[in-house]
Amino acid sequence: MAKEKPPTDAEALLKKEKKAKKEKKEKRSETSGVIKKSSKKDHNDPSRSDKSLRKAQKAAEKEEKENKSGAEIPTSNDAPVANAVADVEMTTQLLNTLEAQNPGSVAVNDASNGDLTVKVKAKPLLGALVPFANPLADEKVGKKVLKGVKKAAKNKTLKRGVKEVVKSLRKSPPSTSTTSTTTITLPSSIVILAADISPMDVISHLPVLCEDHGIPYVFVPSRAELGAAGSTKRPTSVVMIGREVGKKKKEGEGGGEGKGEEEDWGEVYAELVKVVQKAGRGVRV
Image (cartoon, rainbow, N blue to C red; front, top):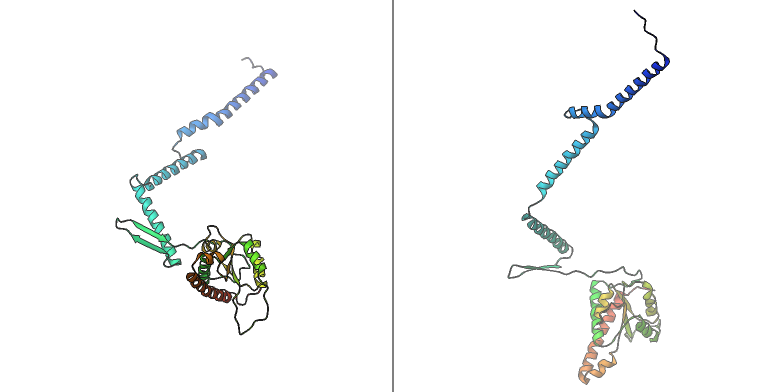
């Protein structure tokens, strides 16, 4: 038997290179081909990869959502009916709330043809009141004051706006501290201010002027209501009610009727002065 020759250095290097190539091929097959094949074979195996589990969970969640949405969506015929019922319930709740907050503010009328008409009495929205609105007329006093403003506008004894009021206040004589108990004289005018004026500097100086000249004044909550009472379409910040009937009113009316209306206005003015002075008791600027 002939003895095998020992491998040379070159042959040993070639064998090492072949082994290294085989190992690389095995690693590649493990990372790519082998795992994919095994995942296909073991598709129903509970120990499959995390990715496949996540995909399966997402698919199941989608199916559940579709089933739920399909069960909740009404048919085309039921949708308008359901919306109408929901609207009626919401409207009923709103009307009940308004009636509970302000009894008598909601009136429902049933027409002959079956239609219902609902009337809601809503109070006008008020802005922020100025901090120096004192005295501020409450609801009862405010109605009396605005009624007096309407009558003053009818009798031509009303002055509107800051400029006209300031001009008339500066012409009026200053107040005196001495008062006589025998004679009671009415002030020459009354000033009505709106308390929801912004900026407040527009009327902030008027209470001081009224105090200096002995003119009673009172605040009402809404400038819109004050403007409407003064026969103007725009909101008004301040009005002045004069004691004497305007010249145009005297000239336009007949002799006897004019005197009668002038006497009626004198009574209204005296009553209005009492209301304003009562509201302003104890107020000092």
